[in-house]
Length: 475
Image (cartoon, rainbow, N blue to C red):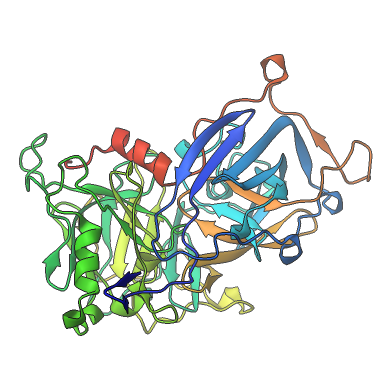
């Protein structure tokens, strides 16, 4: 972007995906990603040689789900297609038998170098044909005991820095929280998305979310706020560049842009971005080196789609905070946020996980705004799974599948509930001997597949859900 002949920012970094459509038997739901004015290399092609496939014929426990398929479409050209399978899925030390998407065709460069995507979202945003997200399957004790090791505490936490990270299963390690800081807990504003109420975004001492009314006119005594969705599938902090139909007095991104590009703000530019979550609000800090991409010399801040009435908290926030997802009660998820201890070292790939199971605190449905203070020990333990970070824009985790296990490297996405990996074409009945055919619990009427309850998560779908579940501008 240029102004007056001066280069302000230049960014070769690829932005979040534009539009995603999830199609089951012709039914589709849209996803709009953030707009990035610095995007480049939009014509990149998918290279199948960069991915590994799940070999269903080699798994003794694999089963194909008949009559159902799926079609993931990105923008106007990208397209993922395949069928639905069932097998044993293992994350860390926990495993269970569940359904997943098998990708056989792809033309989306977003999947170059990865083997699929693991959605850790909520059941309300899952497909009807794959109704149970993987994390819920891993904590569901109603399955076959012979093919599962169940996670008793349905909680996971993400601790990420620029080069690595860890997925903590079963709770959170209090040592990952910065000294003198504590975890704060907030009820989500939606049963379909990990959305929390955000009432303030500050930069350089300037407020970017200037609401037309400070007090919510619908609920007297409650502050105005917007839904802020914690989405690890989004790279940056994504904010509106409009007045949101009169909810705001100023355009947040335009104001940020004018401050950040001003040469007089060279020193101010190195200041953190501050966000306020909850009511009463709790302030958290996004350090400069987390929202500024040094290699690209540009901010990891983007504008949201016009129809999206909220904020997306992407990987920039996950690198700044310890983020816990308490799904003990799926209809009322609890989000825990705490400033990250920058001296804490996540577990590394290849390390002995048995040595990384510290004592932790359990919090059963902690209400909004609760501060647990100094954490204490507990008899439970946490399973820590190593994460990889890619160019500060994506997170990856290794997941194992089948019998015997096959390891797959997948994108970690809290903004969706779909688990899908690249697979071989489905085995035919009778060959080889380990291939199985699995009939669904019912045969859809007329041979047509069931419709999805909801599609894969994303900003367009998020915008509609946010508007339904939590109207912006008020509690």
